[in-house]
Amino acid sequence: MANPTAAMLVIGDEILSGRTRDANMHYLAGQLTEIGVDLKEVQIVGDEPGTIVAAVQGLSSRFGVVFTSGGIGPTHDDITADCMAAAFDQTIDVRDDARAILATHYAKSGTELNTARLRMARIPQGATLIDNPVSAAPGFTVKNVHVMAGVPSVFQAMVASVLPTLTGGEPLISQTVTIHRGEGDIAGPLGALALAYPTLSMGSYPFQRDGKYGAHIVVRGTDVQMIDEAIAKLEAVFA
Amino acid sequence: MANPTAAMLVIGDEILSGRTRDANMHYLAGQLTEIGVDLKEVQIVGDEPGTIVAAVQGLSSRFGVVFTSGGIGPTHDDITADCMAAAFDQTIDVRDDARAILATHYAKSGTELNTARLRMARIPQGATLIDNPVSAAPGFTVKNVHVMAGVPSVFQAMVASVLPTLTGGEPLISQTVTIHRGEGDIAGPLGALALAYPTLSMGSYPFQRDGKYGAHIVVRGTDVQMIDEAIAKLEAVFA
Image (cartoon, rainbow over all chains, first blue to last red; front, top):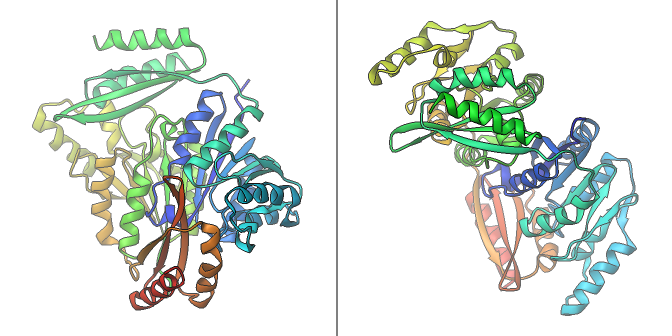
């Protein structure tokens, strides 16, 4: 059976302007691969309601599960929660369960739960909250979409809260062999090997070091014995 | 007048599996911002022809210019050129101009121009070549799509070849002020400021350091005097 599929929507002008280098996509990709969920597509969009709504609707309908990052803080440019409500035709307001979490958190430090902070308790009516052990303000799950923070430490904590709820597939195993030859020499034998093992995926990632060419050949699949066999054959060709 | 718009399509299973952390998107984002081209959307897809074709068609019709990275090497998983031909209804074969570039390059090192390497001369019939000063194998431009390599050093060299051909807009200027207060305290005054300066974009990027909260407030626009004025007002609030 094919593995469950996933997509990710990264939200934020700061990524598209080059100010911030996104770290969440790479983190999520590694986590999903470990539990056998195939991340099939990522979209990165700016802080524009129409674009966010259309993107999440498209991804939600095409993939088993969707993860979003960014735009759920207290400032005026944090519009993700409202966009999710619009995308899935739900009402949205400050919710008592989310407000209680924030009230408890801010009471500890004597910080005022003002209008701006209360914005983080705006949650679509049908959503389930995602625990945020780092800074309290919750993420939420609406339909098949997990809506999480953009700050990497918070994003990672929310991913840890969500992962146990997912049904994984067979974990993808990958093995890498490094061949110190130009990719143009590797391509022929590698292509033949890929044809001989149609259930394995083989990728070639070239590099240049001290003026010499080489490539990391990555063989991926779910059958470790078959992967070992394919790797051995490839190594034999270039021994 | 609004700035020209751009999108990017990152192609490669290795990004989605978490094996490789993409570096090209962040690089391109910075370069485009400098010349006043607005990067509006990025899509990351795997090595699947149908997905690549649909994605590039969608982006090409919605944005002024599109950049792709990945999948133009000599191995069996390098399918980008064929996908671009399919997407724009062009024939594709080994082209004499591209073959000549490769022949000259490989002759220098006495490397055989074998079938695999010739694959890198497969270029859609109506495309214009993009110079590759690093490793010779050219990128190409078809319609409004610039097709470039995934290896960062080659990608960057190709971006340098393409940028002078673009019509830029007014460069986006950004200034950052760091405020050592919780985002919940900043949000109110910042929201009011954003309303007072509708032509500026203001973003808040929170951080936590040594247990204390703060946020980098980034004000972006094309009028440096107006940006200075807004920053001064914000600093006055939190002085």
